[in-house]
Amino acid sequence: MPRILAIDYGLKRTGIAVTDEMQIIASGLTTIPSETAIAFLKEYFGKEKVEKVLIGEPKQMNGEPSQSAEIIEKFVLLFQNTFPEMKLERVDERFTSKMAFQTMIDSGLKKKQRQSKALIDEISATIMLQDYLSRKF
Image (cartoon, rainbow, N blue to C red; front, side, top):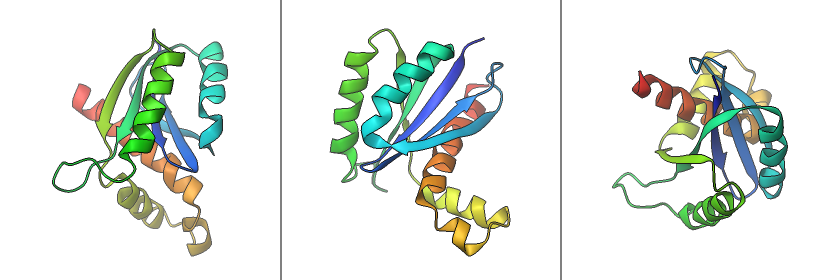
């Protein structure tokens, strides 16, 4: 079975998470510089079967797009032009960063480790993907 991949795209960094081949468990894959996202995905799609990609949709509490929405929309268009055959689904990413930080605290990471924004982005993508999986079944 092909995997599902989730992208938490940001101005500087992009967190990426992926399912196992049975699409049961979401795991953090990596955090990369955002300008390398398309090149990374080309290489990854060449090695792994991916059925669908989820890209976070940043929203404010009232459901309106957040300030970063414009940056992410540009990435979504680039993604669709580069990978026209790939299924793409947008998912609400509200609270994922806060949840990621809390996850880091709950798992006992030291303060220095919790300051890693790259780790927060990767965990955020994982939370987005796991939430998607839990709604899928």
